[in-house]
Image (cartoon, rainbow, N blue to C red; front, side):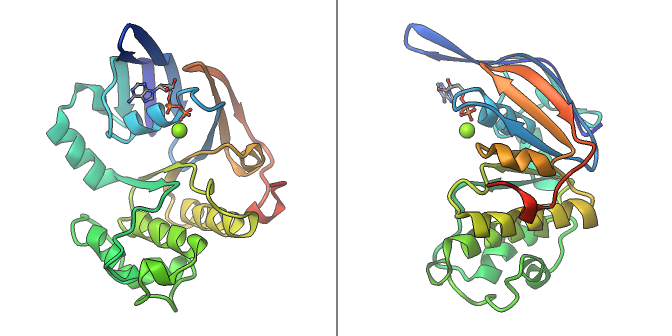
Length: 232
Ligand code: ADP
Ligand code: MG
């Protein structure tokens, strides 16, 4: 098992009101799987992903990454956990505009314990011919693929993706999903993808639905489709 949560709860207090972003979530996610996290806007998907990724603290309950209890760790430990084990991909690419594609990837590989070469990671996402381009010289889909290369170049054990195709047209979205599938299958990276696009669940091993901060359902796919077969 790669992640396990037990009664995981996150409460945001804003003024007089309290929002239960996560409400006693019990969830198990498995090594080597590609899991898709679905749910309406505001259902708690990003909150859950951020806590699994050590970017945020729970209000109560427990989270384990393998046998490491994240909820028992302080900031310094979580920083080390993120650096050593986790890659993130967000909807907005967060590339450094003054650095080339290769340099953007090197920012991460220079401090990772087990990185691949920046050029190899860019090759893997089909950008071997764009190594020295700056973000402004790349299309949206290419920028997102640089961000993916940056995340996979660490060879992280888990890759957490928050709406990675949300800003992309269907063609580039499919390219991005192809890369995620490839990383999942060749490096064995466990992947969690948050998406609004219900079609993407068809390529997942496991589909988790959240509603109002609670797990609504967990389904396992026996037959999965390739990214290009997804009804976008
Ligand atoms: P999703 O990613 O599924 O759209 P989020 O996890 O971002 O949902 O948010 C879950 C709930 O928590 C929402 O009602 C949201 O408004 C609330 N929330 C998220 N972040 C904060 C915050 N920093 N302060 C207050 N409320 C928040
Ligand atoms: Mg979100």
